[in-house]
Image (cartoon, rainbow, N blue to C red; front, top):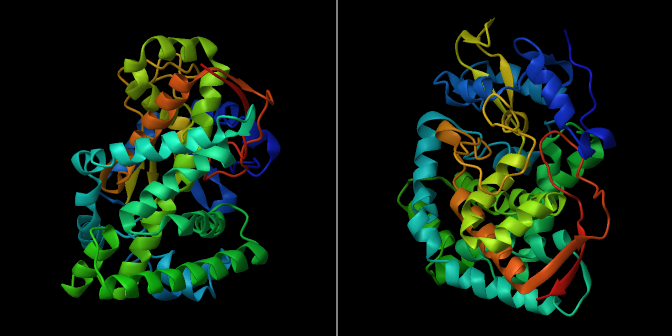
Length: 407
């Protein structure tokens, strides 16, 4: 039977987990007519789809170009010249040899060893940011602190000047918003306009690096393009994806992570007493409130999932947010536990599309939360029920008012 629910509603934004629990208890997969998609909610089913060799992100090669164009028109994805060129095609939405070739060009800069070389730089930046806020008794943790860290760090990796990083967040959020359920003409125009502005900015930055290369990802990608390892469109698409991926999801999980600590004060106190738990606490933040709770896959052949048969071309929705609260995989799944181990969550995806930036995101969070707990002896919510962003594709508080007191 078709599924009836409203992922844009305040109730779903406030707490989607009762809905996910009901989905997990429903036999098989559940059809969601609004997206023409079969939703997988259990950890086992989500993992099977994410790792299945027949699953892909793109319809390319599955159906004719005319059918793809018709589907784009039906979903209001058409008539978006630059969005189609740089966002609808990307490393994230490519498969096979193309995906492997593009991923290889940037993977070496996101290994744990390379990311750890940024630790001192991130620590200095975070300490300075907290110091600039420390004389205030109350702040919005999301806007005043969390929003300023991931973009600046990934911007520095790519080679974006610090002064330009706040604008990158605006472009990123206005582009990404069109991937959710509400695809009105107004949101479509916003996404296309911001993609165009972003493209023109990156054109200028690339021109500067062509004249004067630096030790950054932008210069490394220019070398890859000149060697024929990526074309011009792939160059700008990959640069946009790295900057967009480095913004929203990390901001969201920083906000929801602090909210979790404040909802479970015993766990916060436990972390204060044993700072060595920070790495497992950060992993638990990703499990407990997965910042990207929904992705899609298409099957290239007939498959059996959850006891059902699905033909080639079927679209699946993998609900990472639900899988990470599945009690069949995680004991006491709705409890936030800073020492949870093992914690084989799926917030970073699985298989070929496993998140490239996971090491950098976790390092950002480790440094930020360690600094907060060391600097402030008391942190409290100013609003007991923060408002979370609506939608199926993102999960994080729109704002998080806190009151803090220095140690």
